[in-house]
Amino acid sequence: MYSLENKLYYQDPYIKSFRTHLKDQQKDEQGRVYAILEETAFYPTGGGQPHDTGTLNGIKVTDVEEINGEIRHYLAQPISEPGEITGEIDWERRFDHMQQHAGQHILSAAFEEQFGYATVSFHLGNEVLTIDLDIEELSDEQASEAEGLANRIILENRAIETKWVTMDELSSYRLRKELSVNENIRLVIIPDFDYNGCGGTHPHSTGEVRAIKILDWEKQRKKIRVHFVCGDRVLNQLHQKQKEIKRLTGILNAPAESLADTAKKLSEDKKMLEKSIEELKDELVAYEAKDLLANGKSSGNGLMISKQFNNRPIQEVQKLARFVTAQSEEAVVFFVNDAEEKLQFVCAKGKVPSPSMKEITNKLLLLINGKGGGNDLFAQGGGEALITAEQLFNQGLAYMDESLPS
Image (cartoon, rainbow, N blue to C red; front, side):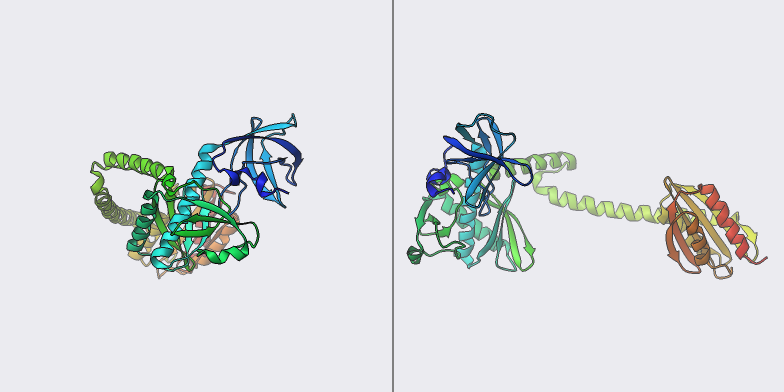
């Protein structure tokens, strides 16, 4: 069982390396190797903050968890020489987490100070943080005001204090939220601004958080989830976005301040072009339908129109069938489309011929283990290429001929 004295990250969150001894080395239920140390500076996952990484005697620490009072350091491989252990903390990761966690305290306190909006949950991700506010709407003005207050607190470089207190001492502090523990109570305090129960690691002053930037927010059930970054992540976000803006200014040949308008115009132009192309395609299909009708073959009380296609969009095949039957009430249409590993077909007719397209479709589906449907006037289907397109085409024509009275 680890005491508070054994948790070096509480004594000094700036510890980058330490020496200790190996108490035990085991495997968990999944076969992962973990080490138990006499004391540790590795922070285990908890309170919304991810675990530290680093090395023990040069071996990578991939995960850190506190389970039943013991802190497990999961390793990439076992420690072969028990005894004195040298631990090295991945300081870049640790300090990033310190910046982000402290920034979350500041932003949550700013929302509560300005508008009385309580934070009900917090997540520290690899790139972005989120807090869930206990509200259903958030305006641009409110987000900007809270962000502004948070950055003023950072600029004032206020102290960030930690203090261990008892339940009896809590009445002296204006806590932002109820505690989830009743012993080993640790408060993180920004005097005259935020008093919060927290077990995470934080810098000594708000100035070390450097900056907070809200990126976006969205509705999550009946809460508002705010996405934001702190510290060096603000610069990383700025660098990435500036890089993309620079690329877009080159691609769109427009200055940064006009990118939105330029992109909007391009989108509108694209829609107009797509509409024009669709209209031209319809004209081509109409001409194609006329050509097919001119070369149709009389059969019984109908005019047989049939054709095979290769990898043609099935929507075009369906549209062509509808154009044909719209131009001739006597037309009977059967199209087959060879779509590589599957076969597709369309059956259609005008008002005069007697066959049921649905009945013919059901027969054809049995040949290709297919699925489809429709009605007596128009039906379609598709399935596996269990036979060739030519065989399906010929069988479909045979069914049509059988159904057309002579």
